[in-house]
Length: 310
Image (cartoon, rainbow, N blue to C red; front, side, top):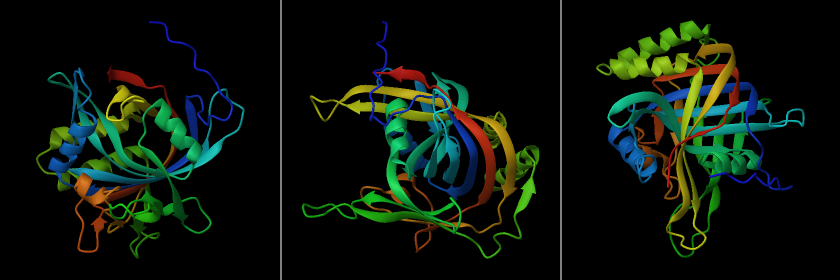
C-alpha cells in the first residue's frame, strides 16, 4: 500500500523529524517500585495491541525519575531555528521479547510533563509520547527543573473542576554540590554496575542487559501510538507499537550525584504517579533515590519503527 504524502499545514504545530537535540542535561533518580504494579502497567499499555508478536516485561523493580532540559530542539529542514524544552518524566526499562526469545532492552516513559506545547502535539502525533503540557519550577537562573505542575482532577465528581497542581518535586540533600563527582562515561558505567549489583542481588542478567543498552548510547524508547475513533469513543481508529531511538551523538560529562536525593510525589485520581507505578514512598509521599546521576550530551531523535499495529 502506497501511503499518501503528509499534508504540511501552516499552524498545525507538528514538526518534521529527525530532531537534533543540543546541550541536553539529564538527571536520573532511581526509585524503588513494585514489579507487580509495573507489570500491570506494561500489560495494559504495551502488551495489549492485537496480533503483536512482541511482549514486554519490566527489567528491574525501579522507576526512573528523569528531569531533563534541552537547550535547543531543532527540526527538518535544518536552519529554520530551534525551540527549548524541559521535561519531567517517570518511566522504566523493559525487556523486549519477540515470541519467547529475549531481543533487546528499551525505555518506557509512562508519565511525562513538558513545558512546551509544540512538543506535546508533535511527540504525540508522530510517536505516541505520553506528554502533557505543564509548568516547571526552575533552579534560579537556570532551566534545571526542580518541580512540575500539570492539570489534574484532585477528586472525581460532577462539580470537580480540573486545576493546575504540583505532581513532583526534587528534594536535594545538604551535600549537593561539593560531593558531586565527575566521571568519564566508562567510569559512570562502572559506577552504575557496582551500585545496581549491590542493590539488586540476583538479577545479574538484567543488569548486564541494561548496561549494554546504556553503553550503546542508543536509547530505544517504546510508545503506544493511538488515535481515538471519531465514530466510537471506546475504540481506536489506529493503534500501533512504536519504537524510536534517541541516539546520543556526543557525551560531554557524567556526574554521580550525592546520596539521599528525594522526590516528593502526589497521587491524584487523574495522575496516580505513586499507586499506578507502585513507587515506594514514606508517610509524606517522598521516594528516596537509591542511585542518582547527571549527564550532559547531544542527541538525535530518529524515525520510529512500527513493531505491530491494529
